[in-house]
Length: 211
Ligand code: PRP
Image 1 (cartoon, rainbow, N blue to C red):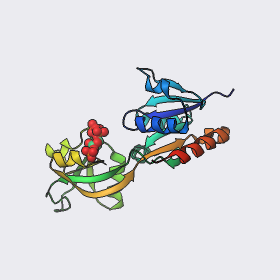
Image 2: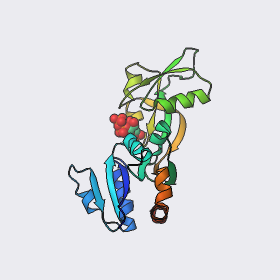
Image 3: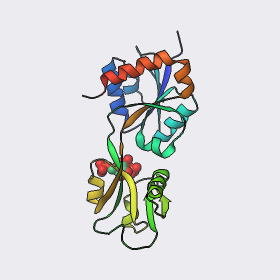
Image 4: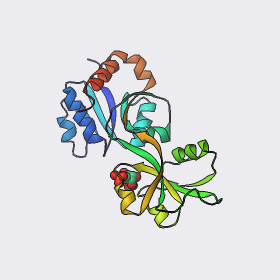
């Protein structure tokens, strides 16, 4: 028997929906559901092996070919770029990239160079470059909404899902930048060497996406 296809899953927010999708396909995910602290887990029936990793690392593992497939948010793909195939939109993990600022702060007013706090410096840089606007970018690791409240920045580029975090902190969306959802990505070499198995998995995924 072939060695199992190895698939890197983003831990946390996307994990539950990905496992739900696999179970809908008919894969037995008991080992993943009862994982404890284990990080590499078999998914039986499907000849798959699941690796649980942080979003950026999912891309690193797939790019380097140590995982054949990855499930990761479009936000991370936009930030990291990299060489791999993006094959399907999985339809869950839906949210948006937005530029936000303190309510009523007139972000585009004045001529001073604005400061933007973000966990996604490349996304923010590309966005303002596309507008021909010079900004200073400050990288923040989490709870980015704090930066304008502490007056470190004029605005933030961040993910908005329900909008609750912005609302509860007196911030508002200035502009939406891009739609985000979970994507299935595939290593370039694996796509050649294990094409049949990967195409079969993609077909099953596509048949089982959605309600
Ligand atoms: C994300 C994002 C926002 C929040 C948006 O943060 O960075 O802070 O979720 O969600 P909402 O619109 O539904 O309120 P996350 O929870 O991943 O934590 P972090 O900020 O510590 O990275």
